[in-house]
Amino acid sequence: MAPVLQIEKIESGYGEVQVLWGISLEVEAGKLTTIVGANGAGKTTTLRTAMGSVRPWHGRIFLEGEEVTRLSAHAKAGRGLVLVPEGRQLFPTLSVEENLEMGGYSTRARKRQRANLERVYELFPRLKERRKQRSSTLSGGEQQMLAMGRGLMQEPVVLMIDELSLGLAPVLTQQLFLTLKSLRGQGITIVLVEQNVHLALALSDYTYVLAEGRVTIQGESRQVAQMDEVRRAYLGL
Image 1 (cartoon, helix red, strand yellow):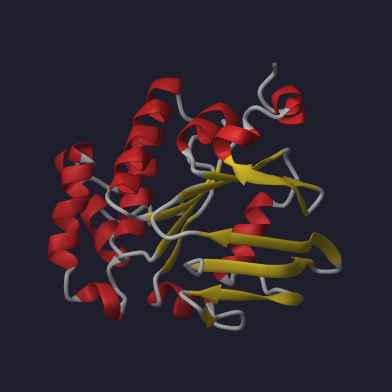
Image 2 (image 1 turned 180 degrees about the vertical axis):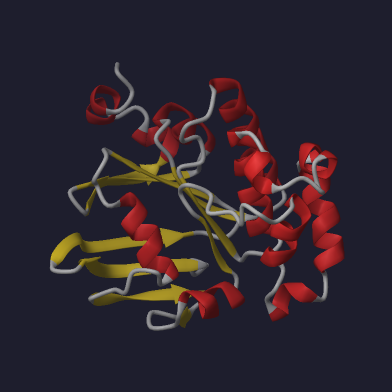
């Protein structure tokens, strides 16, 4: 079966500074693929380049077998490639429900906006309780739930999540990872960039390890977790 998302020999960066050096990834439908690595390894840039907020210098990107390399981020979102960005990037003066509705703007999702809203509220009951509250008044964990919910409102073909647990207490991190497990069980394809390597490897199906803008290790997560170099560098073992 062809990968639902394929990143082929991508090079990109910011200004004259190159960050990615020939990155290639394949994401299988219904699987959770994680990208780990040290700070500055190129993890976030990989997601931003796939999304189109950073333009690739070289290489190609395919979504469901169609090349989307030069499409805008808006156009890619309309085709179901969705990014939950680092830092959440919510609309602070809008309510929880208004933020969610902003996620359901695309043609593919607009017809089912109400059903998708109820689905998000079922997944995150706390958001339903606070649906009239301004997003800026939410806790960090609630804001991350809202960012994920807004992404799900877009009916993603691939849901990319950048630093799910950043700045969150361990108990909230555990809750959100349980939510990821539930989403994967529903058949949603997920790409996760995550600083908590222990949890990322435990939950995911396939792992890419990045260093200095290159893929240095890849494989099934349970096998990667047993590699000595990964255990030393990322698991503290």
